Image (cartoon, rainbow, N blue to C red; front, side, top):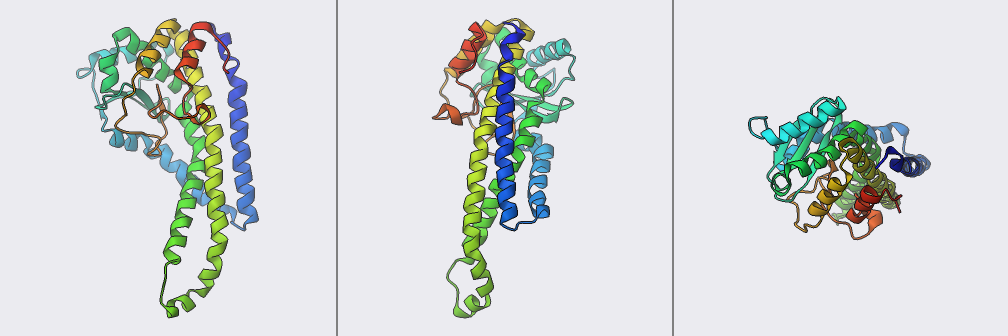
Length: 299
């Protein structure tokens, strides 16, 4: 496998990012036409981005019950990461292990110096040392590409839109319940505003949903790029393909789903399988294996 095989991914990532910008631009224009001031929009997006940026690692470790492990506790795991980071000249990330029996690994963090690689107990038990090496090379590629930071920033407006829709929906529900006549007369101005909020709620929810399409496409392309990078760095594309097949053949249900918990992370394999390929967070294992073993362009 050569570096040339990854070139087709670059325009696809650019196209997905452009689609995402277009969706956000439409949302911003619609909010502006609806009379929502720009400071209000910024007040929703900026906190969402900041919260994901600064709390994602802590929240992910709490959600997955992962604990930081030392070289004395997991010498084999640390040895693999030491070798991979030395090969790439990267700062060594923090290392954590979660008791989840489903084989997987994922990367958290906002920069190359603030990163945690989390490995499930199931992965450590399922893989041989050489297989673990290529699996973690995939995660190191995510760190080198700054994928977590990119996906966090790209997804923050969608998170803010979804949060805004939920807040507005809750407001409408609370103020639409039957009330005594005196309360209805007192709240008459509010009652006139509520019908206007319904299309706003629907619009926010729709845009947040539409934003997931380019976001997930961008994520799938970045997974293929991480596969390619890991294969080139280790010189073992066939072993990485075999490892993906070994992990992907398992149908166990993971104990936690970080994406469902709104925690940005880049996983080796998806925590939940999507029914449709265009809605998946990861390319199909067959497609990844085909690219690794034959260098075929993405479909």
